[in-house]
Each structure stands twice: as structure tokens, then as C-alpha cells.
Image (cartoon, rainbow, N blue to C red; front, side):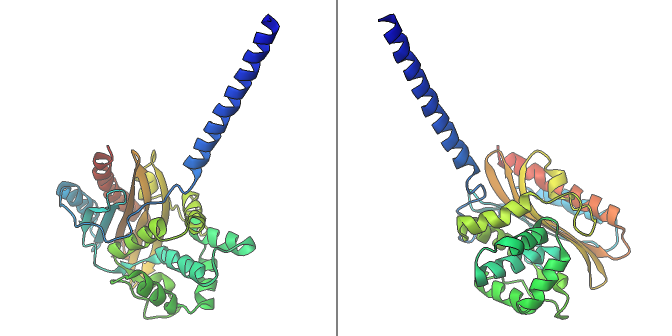
Length: 292
């Protein structure tokens, strides 16, 4: 009898372990699935101007270095679908490599999520910011028409291609329009499409394909947060361009962030990256307070 009871207990224990393991596996799968989905598909509610001091600090981070700085900031809480911060958010600025988001979205619209070597190439374009892939896709699919198609589709009111059709990095977008792109990624794409883009953006290495240290702004200001980013750097119209954009999760809340800066080309890269990272740090304090 005792042996029988022990057998029953063993079987019950095994069943419990199987059940627990199944639940844990299900939870793990659920947590790993569609991490960056959010429901902010409609236009976010207007800014409440509750972080004026942080915006002032972000501006000062750029102003104190001179070289004719331009700064634009837009941050949206994708859970509440509200504007968290906004400064000159509707003023168009050169995108540099941030336009690669539009190139990737246009490709998905045309032929679906890429596979095989093309998938690897597009992920390299997003994660390592590989310019060779961007230039090839730009030439293959109409160059400036890529920007125009996406602007029409997504309602990007302050987005336009460069006057020189070959200079995709001189595409101009406002911070608000960049946020609209991230809202589309998180709320308008299928899970497969969203995962394809965000998995590349989550895995952005410190050293980009051209050797540039792309861990400025968001990754440096938010070292303990989850992020999926697309950075931009380069020169346009005799100005040095540096943009940090992406999705950031703090305390279970998800934000879309765009901090876009440019200076007279006389500024050096270390000074520019330090200034933009300091400006992003001011944004971080606002988001940390909102995310708790």
C-alpha cells in the first residue's frame, strides 16, 4: 500500500512538474512574442508641457558647444498614446541613416518580409547601418519615390527626399514624422513584419559597418532599459548630422523617442555625440518619472 501511495505521489509530482514546466514555457514564449507591439495607431494626444525644465536642459546641452546647433525632440508614450515631450518637433531635419527605416518599410510593402540573403542584408542595413545595402535598395526601388510613397501612406507631413536624388541621407523628416514611423511599426505592422525590423534594431552593435560608434544617445543614456534603435550620422548641406531614434521600454512602459540634432560642420564628432547624448539624458529623466 505504501509503495502504491508513493507511486501515486511520484506520478502526481511528475504531472505537476510537467504542468509547471508547460506554464513556464508558455509564459516565456508569451514574453518573447511580439515584444514591441503597442496600440498607439491614432494621433497621440497633445503635449502637456510638463517637462519644460528637461527640454531646457536638452537644449543647453547642444547650445553650450556652439557651432550653430539645431535640435528637435519628440517623445510619445505608446501605452497612453500621449506626447510626453516635444520641442520643434515639426521642423524637418536631415535624417542621415534614419531614412533606412523608410527603405525597409517600402521593401516590405512591395514584397513582404525578405528571406535568405536579402533578409540578412536588410538586417545589416538596420543593425549595423550598412550604407551599401541602403544604396542598392534605393537605386532598385525608385530612390526619392521610396520616401514619397511612405510619406503618402503614413501621412508624414514634414518628410521630403533630398533635392539630389542620389543622396538618400539628405532626406528630411521631422521628429514627429519619425515617431509616426515608430507608431506604424508598433501598431500597424503584422507581428512577423514588426519582429523582423525590431530584432535587427535591438541587436545594433556598438561599431557600425563604417566603424562609427553608434551607441550614442539612446543606448548610452538608457543603459539598463530595453531599446530598439535606428541611429543616423553624417553630413548634409554643410552641416554635421546626428540623430538618435528608437523604441525604449522603462518600467513596463514603451516610448518612441526621436532626438535629432545638427551643427555647423566645424564641430567634431566626439563633441557632437557627447552633446546629443547629454540631451538624451535630459529626456531620460522625464521618461523615468513617467514610467514609474
